[in-house]
Each structure stands twice: as structure tokens, then as C-alpha cells.
Amino acid sequence: MSLRPLQGALAAWKPGAGGAVDPLQAIASAWSAIVGADVAANSAPIALARGALTIATRSSAWSQQLQFLSVSIVRGIAERVPAANVTNLHFRAGAFRPPQRRVAHVPAASRARRRGDAAAYEPAADLADAMERVRARIRDARRASAAACPACGAPRPPGAEARPCTPCAIAAARERTLALERLLFAAPWLAFEEIREQLPRVTVTEYERSRRTLLGRWWLVLDRARVAQRLGDARRERSIASSYVLLRTRLPPDRITPAVVENALGPELCTLLFGQREALGVPRVEPKAR
Image 1 (cartoon, rainbow, N blue to C red):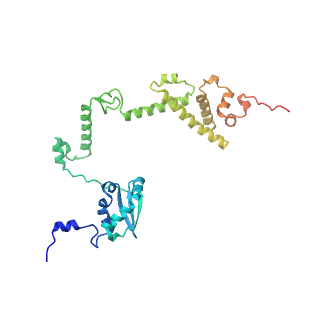
Image 2: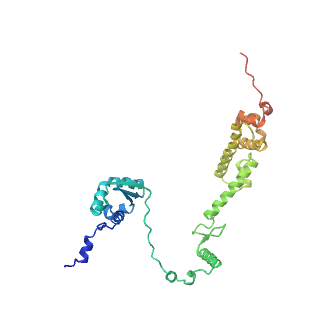
Image 3: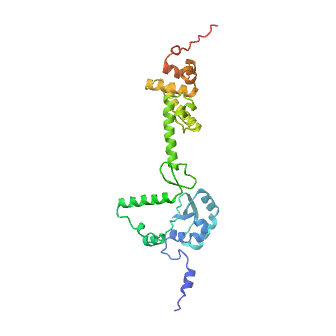
């Protein structure tokens, strides 16, 4: 009996040649050879039932691309895994999950030696020790940074000494918006210049955005009462209506007339809130006799 060279046996081996190999596993093993490395990086066979192979793809675009290659894919499977008997393909877009790359484990001691500080990378003894290490790293980063946030002291890139960091800037803008909305609700007749005297950092853009937000919010309350044809909290809704009229018209209180109120709110809502038109001083116009 002659022995077959191992190199020749390996060269002649194909996935799925043995009867004990699962056809789907055999197709998955040969998938890169069947469709190419680029396609295999964005797709994978996931199910096989009665000759139908389901292929997961990264997106619908990849599903469409593989549909164009269906004939050659079925032919390639037949050549490499004939026992699978694949006759048609189904594609499932978005179901593909690329395999996780394995990161070689580097011992902590090696990482510490590489960075030159073995003691700093030893496991923390307890939570207090871990928190103190975090604080120390923050202090080191602040000392190494050329600039710091004026509000919280976080390290900033060079040239940003006078500007706060993004979280502090967002928090400051939120506080200005809240203060501005409270002021507009309490004194909606104030002009932008008068508001700047109390809130110096408020910009025109912030003022207009808050004004539109409050007008929309207040109108929802008023329109809900109009649709229901009844008031929930009459005192609160009349106060909202007054603020709405002042903020919408931008007129001082001494220039608000019954006609202005009716024009801003509409006759139906105006009557619901304040009673008959005569109560506002709006005269009733009787139709002329023919």
C-alpha cells in the first residue's frame, strides 16, 4: 500500500467532502472562495432548508448586488459543496453581523512597562482607590493642557481659553432659555433691548426662538379650550391669553384695545374667555335692514 503525501491530500480537500459535515457549515467555510473576499465581508449564509439558502447581507444594496450574482453563487456552491443541493437563494438585508475581531490579550504588566508606569496600572484595591486614580489622571491632563474650561476647568485645546467646553456651553444656554421664558411669561410686553438689560447674554436668535416656543405652547392651551367650548382653569387661561396677545402683537399694555384682543384670539375664543363682545367694549354691529 502506498501512502498519499499529506500536501497532496490537503490540496485536494474541499469543504463538505465528508458525509458528516453539515452542509450549511461547509458553505460558510467556503463562502469567501465562492463569492470573493469583498462580498464575504458583507454577507454570510445563515440558513438552509429544502434547497433554499438564506443569506444575511449588510444592507438592501448588498442584497440587490448578490441577486445579480445568484446564478454564479449557486454554481459555486454546487462545485464546492454538492451535497447541499442549493437551488435558490433568499436574502435578508440588515441581518448580517460581521465577526468580532479578536484582540490579542496583553498582560497588565506588559502594558505598564510599555507606558513606563507599572504601579499606576496595577488593579485598584477598592472603589476609593479607583476614584482617586481617576482624579489623578484628570489633574495630570489639566496640567498638561494649555487651556481649561472657565466654568468647570476641563482641559481645552490650545486657543480655547476663553470659551467653555461643550457640556458647559449647553448647560448655560439651557439656563438662559429657562430664565428668558420665565421673563417673557411674566412681562411679555418687554422689547428685546429691555430683556437684554436683565439677561445680558441673551441673543436675538434665542429671544425669537423662545418667543415662538411660548406662542405655540400657549396657543395649544387656548385652542384646547376653544375646541372643548369650556374653560378648565379660567384664571390661568385668561392670564395665558393676555400674555399671548401681548407677545404676539408686541404692543405695550396701554395700547391693547378690545379690537386688538379679538383680532389676536378670534371672536369665538375671545367670547369664551371674556364673555360677550360688549364686555370688551366691542360694539355689536346690527345688520342693515333691506
